[in-house]
Structures are given as C-alpha cells and as structure tokens.
Image 1 (tube, one colour):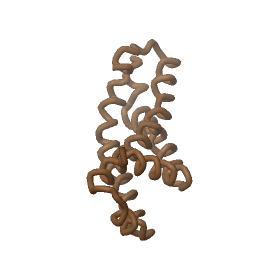
Image 2: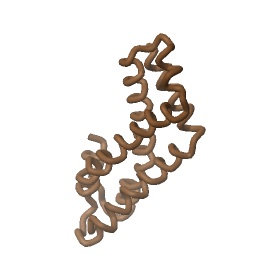
Image 3: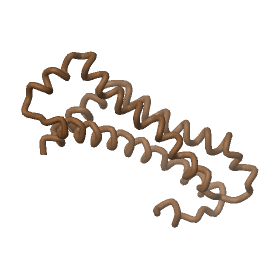
Length: 133
C-alpha cells in the first residue's frame, strides 16, 4: 500500500515538471513520424498498424528506462532520496512505486498516441481488431 503513496507523489512531481509534458509530446510525435515517414506507410497501399506495433518495442525500450533513471536521478539530485530512506518505506515499496509512476506516465503517452490509429482509419479501412488486442 505504501508503494501507491510513492507512485502518487511521483506522478504529482511529474505533472509539475516539464518532463512529463515533453514525454507526452515526444512519444506520439516520434511514433507517428517513424511510422508514417520512415515506415513507408503510404507506399504500402493498405491501412495497417503492423509497422506501428513493430516499432513500439524499440521506442519503449529507450524511453521507459530513461524515464525511470530520470526519476531516481532526480531523487538523488534533490536530496530527497536520503529522506525517503529514513521513512518507513522498504526498497520494494520505492521500486514498485517508481515503476507504477513510470507506467502511468507511459500509459498516458500511449493514450495520446491513439491519434495514429484514428488518422489511419480516416485514410483507409483499418481493422480495429489488432489495435484493441
């Protein structure tokens, strides 16, 4: 239960700092740019999300650790890590709380990425089954 306190605190800090807003802008823009421009979407002639789903693991493998490392580095830089260690939080609570906060930030970024399948459905007949699966 204490991990939710850590997660809520991290989300509040993220909403107050520009890093969350940057992530929420960069992730959808990067996925759309890589998918439409580099993925040669318009050359295929079909409305398919296959390239987007193939791209997302490579993008998230860079963004997720960077976000998590930023959270830990910010704690150490601001000096609140020592304060957290004196409170009744276990290391497990800290790690899970930070994980939940990073997961929440990335989930919001992926929700903003919903513009990609919506725009594809406007361009052609998109099969929504794989998108929701």
